[in-house]
Image (tube, rainbow, N blue to C red; front, side, top):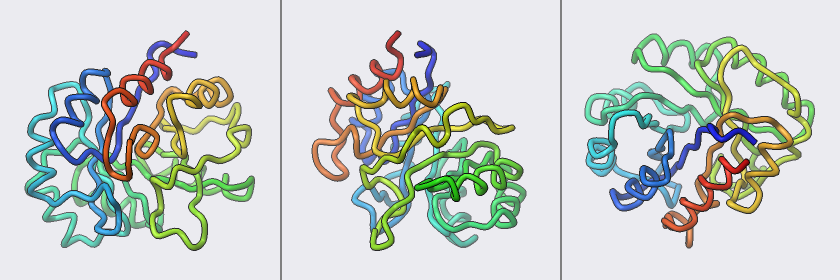
Length: 215
């Protein structure tokens, strides 16, 4: 497993959680703008957190089928490095958002079986990064952060023309195996480092980052 694996800690809700992520050498931190999520933050809350992020750590805004009005509000106030699109955005919408906001776009694609893999190739043509995530159950309220994983063997040996990140049910106990199977250079975690929904645990964040970089 590579010692230089990049880690994204998603769903931060306060500066204390941010500090835990930074102390553990996370490369990305994610802010969720989705009212149904226990990790949702207001634009004002996100601004305070984002302003405390040190140089060298990428600030990511996670949105779900956001319209331009919401994206205008977020990007006007919150200092960001990446927009993460986690809804049903079409390839055309991904391109439109990249052009309109001048920010790199990461597109999340849910995977449950082999039939879902073609979408990864499609979005890799229009996004700056792709997030390979577990497809949520049909009755799920959240498109991510459900603590579910998928069969990592589905993407073993696969590559795309843009950087990609592995997500979906990763924990300090499973991230090493996931990296070994997929050779992922980047991993994303949210619920896997929480003590309760939306409550980040500093010790679990540290353990996750250490496990992701273990030899």
